[in-house]
Length: 350
Image 1 (spheres, rainbow, N blue to C red):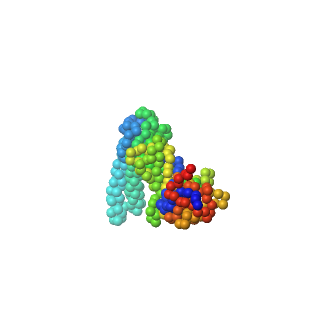
Image 2 (cartoon, rainbow, N blue to C red):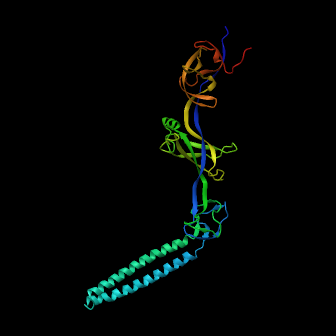
Image 3 (tube, rainbow, N blue to C red):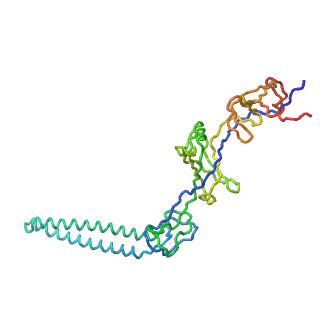
C-alpha cells in the first residue's frame, strides 16, 4: 500500500527575539542657546562657525565701556562707604568712654551708634551693587557653558544685541551621545506589561535589555546600540501612543540632531520557545492546527495556540512539544489518523 509522502521536521526550541519597528527622531543630549544677557554693540566673534567649542571658551565680546564705567563707579561708592564706616567707628569709640564718665549725653551715644550701624549698612549695599556691576560687566564676555559644536552666528559684528533687541547669538549642540525619541501604541505597552517588560527601568531578573538599533538613510545599520532609559508613564489621549526614549553613543557624530530614522526595539526574548515554520501552520475558522507525525507514522491534527510570527517562523505557545515531528509540506492531502510516509525533504512523485 502506498502512503502519502510528506516532508517533516522536528519542533525546534530556541530563544526568540521579538522586535518592534518605529520611526524615531534624533535629539542632541544637550542643546543650548547662547543669548546676550546685556545690551550693547557686538564687537568680536572669537570662534569659527560649525566647529567644536570647549566649555568656558570665549565666543563673543560685547562693548564693555558702559558696564566697565558702572563697575568703577560702584567700586568708588564702596570705598566711600567704607571710609564713612571707619569714621563712624572712630566717633563711636570716642563717645563711649565719655558717656561712661558722664561727659557725653545718652543722645550723643545713641547718635554715634546709629551713625556707625547706618555706615555699615551702606557698606553692605555698596558691596552688593559692586558685585552686580562686576557680574554685568562679565556678561559682556560671552562664554560657552558646554562643550559641543556651535552653529552659525545669529548676529553680525556691530549689531546691537541684548534682551531688548537681538538676544540669540548662536546655539551649541552636544551630540557625543544622542537621544532617540519614538512612540509606541497603547496596545504594545499593554503587551510589554503582560510579558513583565518594564521599559525604561533596569531589571536584574532578566538576561537581556531592551536595546535599540537604528537604520541610516542609505539602508545601513548604525554600528552602535542604545538602551531605553525612559518611557512616559501616561498615554497621549489624542494619539493613543506613549513616548519612549533611548540613549545611544555617537562618537563619530554620524547621527545628526533633528534627523528621522528607523528604530528597531528589542521588546522581548522568549527563552526556550517552540518554533515551527509558518508554512506548517494551517489556519481555519475553528483555529490553527498542525499535523504531527507520531512514531508509528500516523498523523494527528493538533490544534495549537500561536504566538508571534517572525519572518518565516511562528512561535507556538501550546499544543506541541519539543522534538515532535511535524508536517511542513504535503499536509493538504492529509486527514486526522492517516498513515503517511515521512521524509526529511519532500519529493514530488510524478
